[in-house]
Amino acid sequence: GQQVMQIPQYQHVQEGEDFTTYCNSSTTLSNIQWYKQRPGGHPVFLIQLVKSGEVKKQKRLTFQFGEAKKNSSLHITATQTTDVGTYFCAGADTNAGKSTFGDGTTLTVKP
Amino acid sequence: EAGVAQSPRYKIIEKRQSVAFWCNPISGHATLYWYQQILGQGPKLLIQFQNNGVVDDSQLPKDRFSAERLKGVDSTLKIQPAKLEDSAVYLCASSLGQRVFTDTQYFGPGTRLTVL
Image 1 (cartoon, one colour):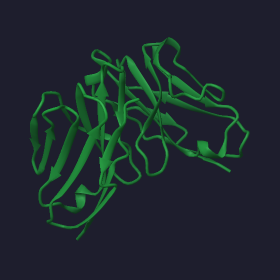
Image 2: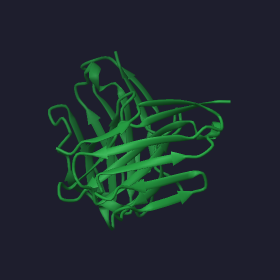
Image 3: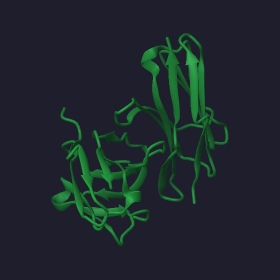
Image 4: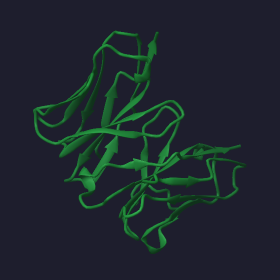
């Protein structure tokens, strides 16, 4: 079945440093969504990517969808303490009729 | 706009007991999801409803888990009997349901279940 892997599992950064998390799918995706879960909270939708090679920006966050639509990345420039949390990707494989969450990357930021 | 409501927020039971969780989705959302999130892992879909019909329950352990969505609104998820490995956060989410795979999912606060 479809597998969605995220790396790294954990990332510790100093405030002001950049951060990147990667999401890789075993199957071609129709779209990918990114969610953020704060400690003790629930996942909150950030963005959706649909097109091959698509790049979207939200302030300091940059999201990319790979050309082959099997991978994606989230890059945060100049991290802040408010960026702390776990970032999940969820890949939709419409051929399989499923959307699967990765296990997330947990970001901690040291002030 | 009110969010997805879930209750209870916390539940502690002993193994072999039964437990039920309740979810009220955002008004007008046709699709409702139940996820199991084990500590350190991503949400794992247990069951997905479109209105009051089941779209996907392939990962629901049907020997002990059951779910229903009467009248296409509220939903309950039941575990009977519970096992130690059922300790997790149970998340309910809803979406408009017009285009299932591109819809934004809105999550409730979750129910943290501890099985002793």
